[in-house]
Image 1 (spheres, rainbow, N blue to C red):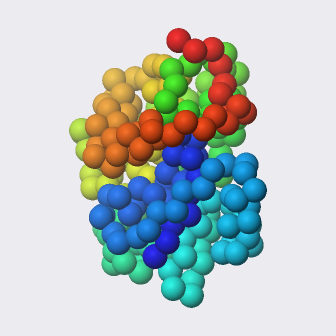
Image 2: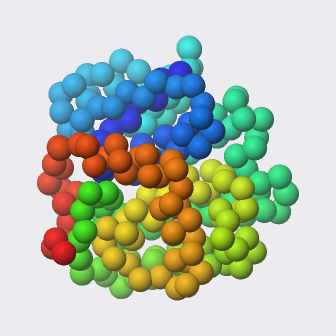
Length: 215
């Protein structure tokens, strides 16, 4: 398999797809492309109609979109273990994953992922409401699974929310104690530590993602 990703410092959707391979130590070749370069588009035009990352190529199958990749890998290589076993918990995990996939636009626009940076930004009321909703999700799950992943064992839901944890770290967002407990669980994980180490080695600057004032 080959997984095409972009700059690890900035690419949230790349991180989501990358995590399932790192978490389960699956055999895959990571192909990293620099954002907004000619090579980025010419390479991807050969493998995906969207010319976007992440894209997974598995023999004759190409899968794009992070959530679709996560679902594909879970079905084909993990026998479904990347979702909770319990039907009710699985439904909730899918619901909050879809909520992340299709929402939180203010947070995304105002606080782009920038792993190497420490920044301060002025955030809108809309972004504050979205942060409160994420805090609520994480806190509720930590009440059920203290000091664990969102559903006890690592799941696709954790992949979907991992970039938000990194955003909150960059911009110094204060969380409730239970939500902070989850954030620290993510930050201390081996996979995220590996991603951050690899991101720190990059030198490319994407100006549109250098939001806020350095602190």
